[in-house]
Amino acid sequence: MVTSEGIKKLAKSLGADLVGIASMDRFEGAPANQDPRYIQPDAKACIVLAFRVPRGYYRGIEEGTFFSVYTTMGYAGINEVFGPIILRELVCYLEDEGYESVPLPNIYLRSSAYFDKGENDPSVSVPVSPDKPFPDVMIDMRVAAYAAGLGEYGWSKVFLSPEFGPLQRFAALLTTAPLEPDPIFEGKICDRCMSCARACTGKAISMTEADHITIAGHVIEYAKVDLKACSIAYRGGNPDYNPFLDSKVKYEDYKDLYFGSPILEEAVHIPKYMRHGSALEGARGCMRECYAHLEKVGRLTKKFTTPFRKPGWKPWKIDRSQYPDIVVGNKKRSKDDSLL
Image (cartoon, rainbow, N blue to C red; front, side):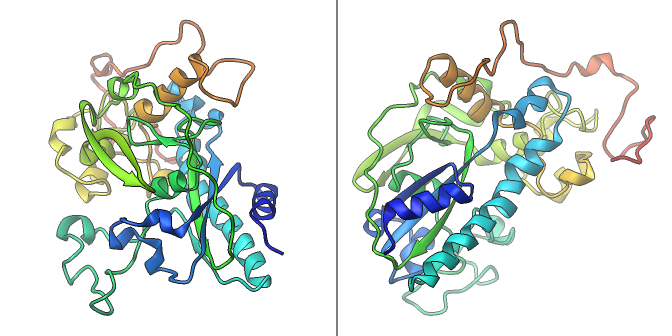
């Protein structure tokens, strides 16, 4: 017999750090193109898995000396490799028990045309019938995590769990198995300290303006976020925080471009191992600063023998006036480029 407790035990044995279960009625009111009930109309439950981003994945970016591991293992590795492997194991187990199940990996599948033309442009996609949304329906993982009782939204709109704060990524699956849902999280993690907004290198998080969403009857408040500014800074568009950026590039030149823009890619000398998903800024405000604060004030249940931020630690910022003769990016370089 498949039970909620049994599914959680199996998922954790396979490598998930947190597991929560939401009933499908908790998605009532979701936009059609984010409503999982259009994906599997007979689903009885949504199982949400959280995979921690180990604190050590950020250490090299904290020191400004090692940028590859967060992008490759803390982002793409979890979303595109580790998470889907565990989803498949759970889907196969449930289907062996007779319950159809649909994996929902944390991989954004809509084309770049979606951002430029909008969801209703027929060159992006068209609904297969008038009563259905355009494909692909993509659930909001934060909504699913909240509906599954795993934590709350922080002011930055990043999801917070009581165990890891902002340091986790999610995957989910839908199933026809009649599983008992978890209660909505009723604790309090975010204390509105605004550290996330102050430390964001893209100045993307408002300190005064808020957006709201209702999930399972609960009204959720979080900051109004400038997604363009976020994506550009996060991918290394700010010369003060990107040692790989062309020294002549100014952030203002790229403020109106989406992430993945060919122009932005041309300006940023991204090492080949990070070409398709650079996260050079390392979420300085919404993840690192947030985590450091929550750990310092004792709001996280996961403890370490040493603090994330050591006494005397200071955030680094590149002073490019000290390097007038060094040009990186697509210009001529004085260093051997064979390893990049």
